Image 1: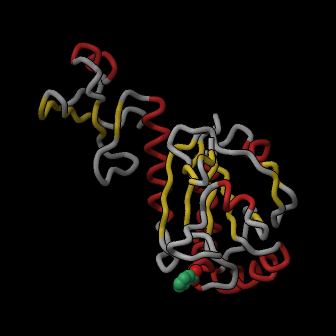
Image 2 (image 1 turned 120 degrees about the vertical axis):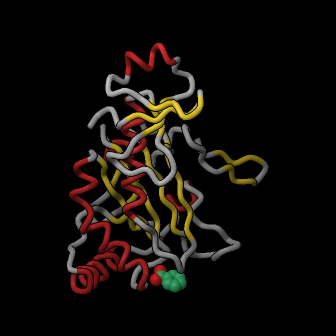
Image 3 (image 1 turned 90 degrees about the horizontal axis):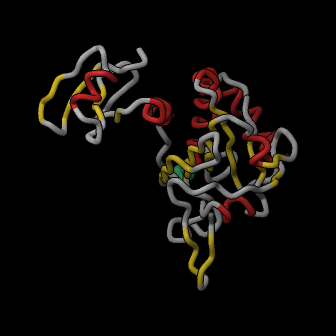
Length: 220
Ligand code: BEZ
C-alpha cells in the first residue's frame, strides 16, 4: 500500500495491492477496484490535455484496444485536467489520430489519484504528471511500473509484450529472455530439475548451461 512516513512518500512496489480510489472520468465516476473487476488493468498518466505527444499516445492506445481486449486487459488514462477539457480534447484525438477514445480518462483535477500513485515528480515538473504506467493483475497486485519523462512518448507494443510475458509466466514454469516476444523460445526456471523438466516440457529443451535451458513456448 502507498504510505506516508515522516513526510516521505513511499512509492508503490511490485507485488503491493494498488490503492483504491473514486474519481471522475470521461465515462462518469469510477470506483477503481470495482471498475477493474476480474481483469488485468493498465493505468497510465500523461502530463496534460492538448499536448502533442499525449495526443499521439492516446490515439495509439485507442487503436491498440483490441489487442488489450484479447488479453483481458482494461485500459484507463489520467491527467490532472477536468472532464470538460478531456471531452474537448477527445475530439482532436479522433480527428488527428483516426481513432476515437475508447477507454476512460480520469479527470484528476484535484490530483487525488496522481498523489496517491506518486505520479507527480517535482524535480521534473511541479504541477503535471510524468508518464507513469501501472500494470495491475486481477488480484489487484502491481506487476509492472514504467516511468517515462514528459517529452518521450511510450512504446505501447512493449507494454503488450510484458503483459504477454506476465500472463505466460504466471501459468508455466518458465521466464522470458531478452527481447522475447510471443512465440519465441523461453527459458526453464532454474528451480526446476531436469527430471521435472522432462515431464513438464514434452517438446524438449536445449541445455546450454545447467542454469540456462531453452524450450519452445509451452502454450503455443
Ligand atoms: C507532450 O506533448 O506531452 C509534451 C511535449 C513536450 C514536452 C512535454 C510534454
